[in-house]
Length: 238
Image (cartoon, rainbow, N blue to C red; front, top):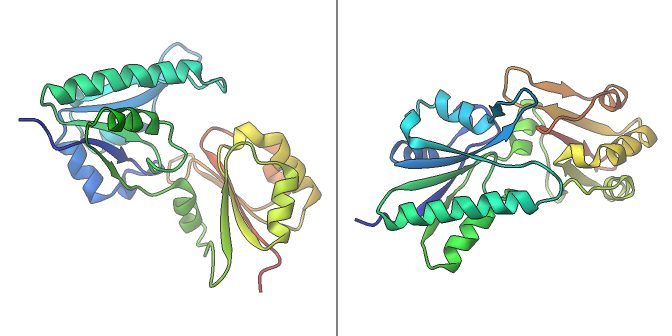
């Protein structure tokens, strides 16, 4: 019997308790679950996805890691996704129930969407399950009300510039900056020029090594790891 759809399941930001019941049921009923891993300097691999899946007691025989290169030049990553697409399609056509996981929310800056779109183009049904974005979990961690009434929220990827951040905050936007390592110099330039800004910096939200800072000087002293983000609340709010 052919399964109804290939499911793209959002894992949330890292805390396994933040996964939705819908996503949890999808994983426990899957025959195969594809998840990304990255190489570490010691020669092994690391994967937050794997940590979450194991904490949720997903059977080891169901999980299938795939190596995802993390270079800014994305040719190798697209090649990895193309291989995942081929395996997922083959398993689906063989009647297997397949999930592909994404950290955070599968529809927010998730390159795994490349696989979803390839399957859609082939006429294979897909189902994308919503998750908790990292900036929503981080805002909750700090008890922030991200936007109120007619305020606006803008989410920037790793190509944000200091000039953009200054302009957004001057216009009373709440700004979320994702992928901080890719724009670390620009973010630190903005913070150095705006020492009184209402800024909230997060690392590894919901994990044992989480970090939350609001002092721009302390933030600028830190290297930004992959799982970090910034929320800037405008000082011009009414």
